[in-house]
Image 1 (cartoon, rainbow, N blue to C red):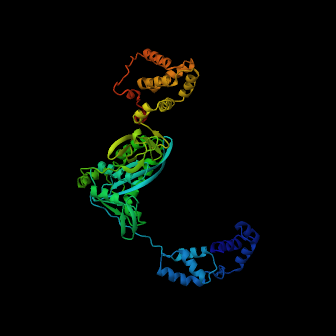
Image 2: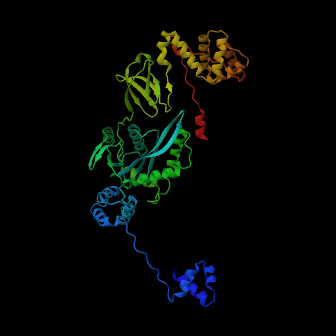
Image 3: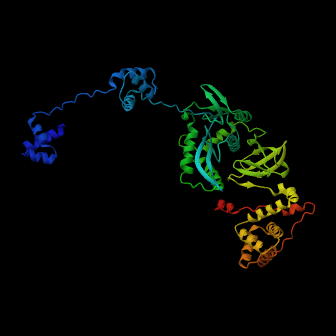
Length: 490
C-alpha cells in the first residue's frame, strides 16, 4: 500500500465518516486492505519477500571472472563451461545475466575531413530486380562519392561482376574529369581475394586497372562500415530520394532518370554536412584530381567459347551466330554491356548487340549465306522460320498458302522480299486484308501494298539488286520499335 492510498483511507474515515464498505467501494479496494490501513497508526511497511535463489548464483563469480578476462566471450561457450561444472538451469537465465554484466560502452567516432582530390569512396547498392524483355535481372547501383566535395556518381547495372565494376569506375572518372589518389572499399571480392589480418591479397586484374589509373585501393577494416560513411550516406540518399516509390519497369527510362536526378538534384542540393552544394565544392577539387590515362583500360568480359554444329555460341543465357565456317571452332569472346565481339587468332569474325533477355537466339543472316546456297532444304526451313517470326498472322496465312497448293518456298521468298522493300508493318497490314478475302499468294499481297501506298500518295520504290552478291539481296534489316524514344520524351 502506498502513502497516497493510506492517507485517502484515513481522511475518508475521520473527515467524511464513511464506513469501511463505503471506502472500499469508492477506492475499489478490498475491505481487508481498508481495515488494515485504519488500524495502522503510521504507513504500513510492506514486508519484503525473501530473495529467490537462482540456479545460476553459484556460478556468477566464475562468469564474472571469465567476462573480465575475455569481454567478448560468447554466451554459448560460457554455457558449456558452467554446464560441465554442474549447472542445470536454462540458457535464458545466462543470457539475461550476461546482458547485465557485459560492458555497455559504445564507441565514439571521430569525424575526419580529407583534402581535395585525396579520397573517394565506392560501394554497391542492391536495388531488387528489373524486367528485361522475357527475363528478370538483378538490379544493382554502383556509387562513387568524392570525399571532399561529396560529388556523387551513380550507374545502374545488371550485375556486380569485375568487368562491370571496372567499367563503372572508368565512367565515374570520365564524369569527374580525373582520378582521386585513393579509393576506399569494403572487402569486396572484386577488389580483395583474401584477407588475414594485415595480409591482404588484391584481385590481380583490379590491381592492374588501379595501376593504369594510378589510384590506391584502400580497404576498410572488417566490420567497420563507418569508415566509408560518405558513400553509405550517399546510398541511403539514393534509396530515399530517387528509388523510393519509383516503378522499375523500363531500363532505358531508369538510366535517363538517374542522369537527370544526379545532375539536377543530387549534386546541386545543399549537403547536410558541408552546408554547401557538392557542385560548388567540386570547383575546388577538380583541379586536384589526377589526369586520365592516355590509353583507356578495356573492361570487356573475356572468355573462350566453342561454336556449336549450328554455328552458335552461348553466352549469358543467349545464343549468338557466327559464320558457318567457324562451326565447331574455339573462339575468343569479348563482351561489353552493349556489344559482343568474337575473334579467332585476333581476327574479328562476328559482332552482335548484346541481349539481356534469356533463351534468345541472335542471328546474322550473312553468317549463313554460303550454307544456304549449298543446302536448299536448309534455305527453305530458314526462310519459313523468318516468315513465321514476322507475327501471329503468318501462321494463318501459311496454312492458306499450303491449302492453295502453291509453291511455298517461292511465295514465301517473294513475301520476304516485300518485307525488305516495304517493311514488316505494311506486309502484315496487307496480309490481314488478304485473309479477309482469302487471297493467298505473294502477288496478292504486293498488289494490296501498292494500292494502299498509292492511296497515300507514296511512289513505288525500285528494288535494289547486287549482281555480284545475289544472296545479299535477300538480307533484311530488322525493324526497331521506335516507341521507346517517344517514352523518353514524354
